[in-house]
Length: 288
Image 1: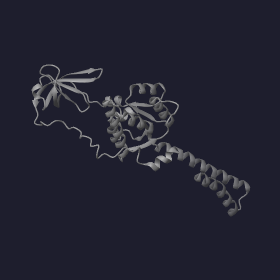
Image 2: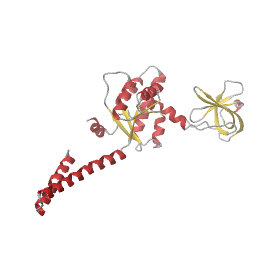
Image 3: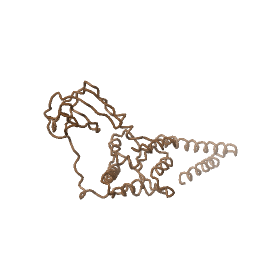
């Protein structure tokens, strides 16, 4: 409202001041009035153009994206330069599931809350809250679709059904599994990789290790190397419905004997309780 006040003052005051200062005729004063009005219109148009070009894209995260955990690594790379919006109803759902009797669901929900907290506490990542809830539906997927549509944002999820629903409703959607698959390193027979063998395989003489992305690697003759890191010559790569499996034979044992890095155990006693976004004043303005 303030900027419109100054615009009106400019349109009215400038022609009036020129009219009295230079004794312009009415036609000349009208011409100055038109020029002032055109300047204001040009200012409004340019403001909208620059605001549109400078506006960041928005991504709405659902519970499956947060529980998956990979979204934090993606966000840290600045590959997706956008505002990450986490609806409050998603956090509420995760809090509810975190008290589930099912240990798998409980751990996934807790990881989702941890990822949400890490996203909001990382300075290089821009996060924002969304407080609106939809009382007319209890379906979280439907709430996510409505939120993405209302905010004109891209939906980020690891839920296959939600991905299909968003696509059918012409809502931009990015499935984390598809994104990760596009960046998966390709391995070809004949190549050599270094792998830590963690356990014996299903067949006699086999040992199993895992790549960083979770791909299972089977060493055909690696049983005696369990607990060691070896150079493995790849013999075949098989694509299954659940992912890839890589097979190979041990060439040499490497000097590195220690187990691969494992994330430190969570210390719940030292961990601060989850808070729904730290920029409370900013979010209050967004809520209005």
